[in-house]
Length: 420
Image (cartoon, rainbow, N blue to C red; front, side, top):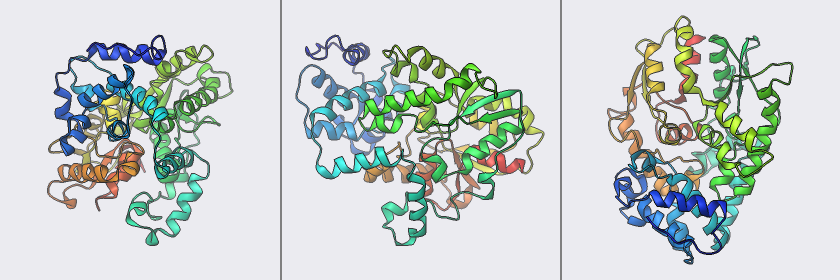
């Protein structure tokens, strides 16, 4: 697809990057077949092909409107279209560029602006955990929309959530706790540390880390997202270089696939920052999703896991894992090797569940339609068909749990329980 950049975008990093991506576009339309919003709405402008044309028009000097903004807002950034595209179009990056430009030019209604500010400031704030605790106290009184976002006190975690292994190991990895995960599902991080410990790896946490940068970036605050990335790099660097008494880590491990896809992109995001470019590239290269370690962990874990055989699990692969990171099959194989009976969605296992970071808050009607569609395929015979639904991203877990009585867990929590 040929494009002629408007003068204001010529020579800029974003303009040149967008132009290079657009050159790959052949407008074949394969992507529409796997786009969740196109499947629901049937509107060309709510599919990748239509959104690409909208972004192209803006880059060529066209004036974006509220309608342009709405069609870009409705995109989940699930990147399913990237897995489908025969030309390798980096649609996720292109839509981020388009959103940033449109956000600067189209004023949102006051209510939308307030909600977006609340999300990017509130979800990454130290006050988020106390707010969740308060929400749990009054949860029965909350409207359904808010109740779905606040986990019940009984399901908030377990007594094991605060149990961090005290053993030291020669092999060490860094763990990013995340911004919302410690408040919404605190057992995921400690379960990760315990499972790694059982396999002979020590999980370290660096002080001063926080959001990976995804929340602000996807809400159009690119500068804020880059600031989050630099803060994390600064906090991790002493352990990456082995400058502390803890020694040197061999990997930076993500147990939230949404964080993983973002941190793996640090090198590109900060490539034009001379002070951080080299460090960002190093951090990105060291970053691994927890599932990438699983084949190495299975031999040690298999000797210690009890009660896995016959336990039925339905696996939901987050979009950030199967499309963003292009990692498929590793969790299912690893869990099966440990003795679990693992199934996947009977159909549409490649489609998004509707969580997509803040999407389920900003686009609830579409998000809940996708959730219900996903759950229908994950448990076709009803809630009693499987013992648990497992996934690898806290957003997917919370979103799916709001629509089913079947427990929805992180896969590492299930493995951790079998080690207890």
